[in-house]
Length: 410
Image (cartoon, rainbow, N blue to C red; front, top):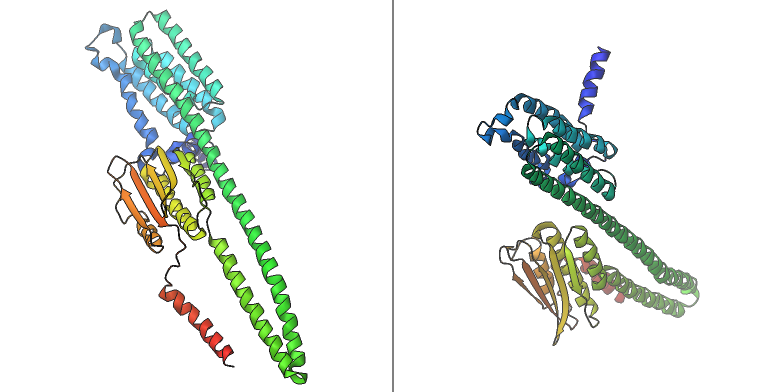
């Protein structure tokens, strides 16, 4: 029983994907459902190994069928293992698939189809230079066998060109994937460092702001308590001073919170570049030539963040551009991409974006023709605009106002 159980476990482990396998680290982990079926879709080209069917009964292809069917069974095993094996074992599966093609070629010259599969997997063996060496070596060895068998060179030439092209493209795709992974790591590291620096700054500001003020309030309150019986006039003066200090502290805290909430446009542009280029989107931007009012800059930064997120998630673009310009008394932010376009006026976060812009007296224009990309033009007045308080905010401030009224008339 134990021996049988061990055998079953070994069979299950045969096709279990390793952490560094193509299935777990390759493009097939994409969010696209179509991309996840990449290994199955690639098997469509296996039909070419049955090329003798279309040869019209050529005597040169007699006895090809049964060796070909047997080779397909063996190939499927190596094919599945190539996607699930650890990266260090990939080269052995590449050699096995290439050897399978070499063994079948005397019976079926269309076995060069296996050589193409071997070159496609060779792109993921070791460093890019090693992968290219393996590809060239496989092509050279197979050409030698073809020469020994005196087979037509015109068919070999087609197979060699396809195999070389598939292998080289695979190497470049792998290098590009590694570069994107490094950009994503850099983006995450920049965000982590920025968040750490911001927390440290907030801690220092609050310590410097509230430490002295609260100490002063405590000292003056204690003094007023001592003077309450001996000198009521002086005690009231100290209490009034405590009230003044507390109000000044409240104003400073509000200013500090406003600064914490503010988002810098330059920092947001840099973050957008990291995010989009890590997703394979070429990003060009022109920062504002002049300083913007804090309220305008914060709003444009938040709008830019939403627009860039939409490009990264939904646009399927390869290029994006952002520019910030001054026209008369307005700041205009333009965001353009060459994606699929066709977005609605109220989708993908555009409703919240429009409300944020209109609250400052600005406007949002959208041009998004299907298949021709999307362009957003956000215009904001350069004057400081105080947005209307929401009913919720008004309700939240009512208790504070009542308390202030009571203190005033106490």
